[in-house]
Image (cartoon, rainbow, N blue to C red; front, side, top):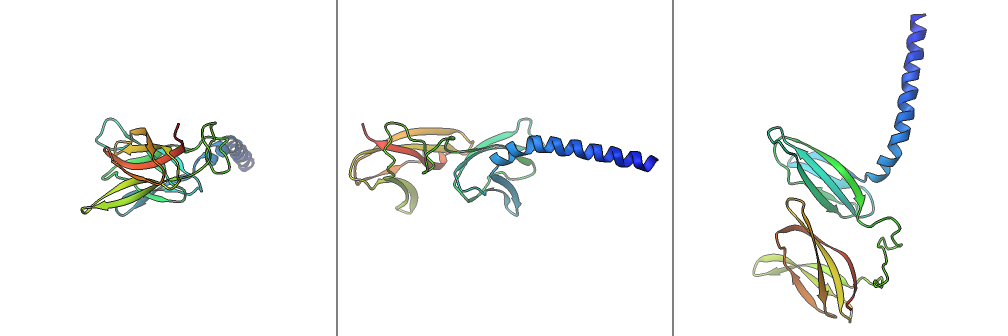
Amino acid sequence: MMKRNFITYSLIVLAMLFVWQMSTTPAKAALKCSRLVKSVGGEKIINTCGNCRIVNIQRKRPSAAAPINRTLTLAPKTTTDLSFRGPGQSRILSDTPCHPEGASASGKSQSPEEDGKRCIQMQRTMKAGVSGLALTNTCGECRTAVVDRIAANGARRSQNVAIGGRSSIPLPSMGAVQAGIMNEKPCK
């Protein structure tokens, strides 16, 4: 009799857990493309999806009163080393696509002034032994790009840059550790 009650109780608990998990898991699983992985040198974050992701990470240290929050932009199918060192625990707070829902087939939303062309490319440069970045416009007409810079503390700053046809300009870091081209359009 006691064994039957235990089995019945166990089945009820399992059924309730299953219903709860089914109601909460799909929404979270659909959004999570990034994973934290511990390595010998620290931690890495892996973007397992085939699209760009914006990931917020929080790091709690045993001795620190406030946690450290960072926002990273991850390219598709990449692994990125995190700069956290020493004891502590990291977790992913959010994982969202770089481009909003309803984006076009190219993965980019189209506004009326955008023409869908991709003319501006980011390139590494080397001058006097110092590496840097440059923006190159491969099209024949003037183009404007929105460049997103991310600082070491996770702060983001965007800048509009106009580049003449078939020309190149240097892209200063301005204290950023990451940079990317968010979108581009013809000059006005």
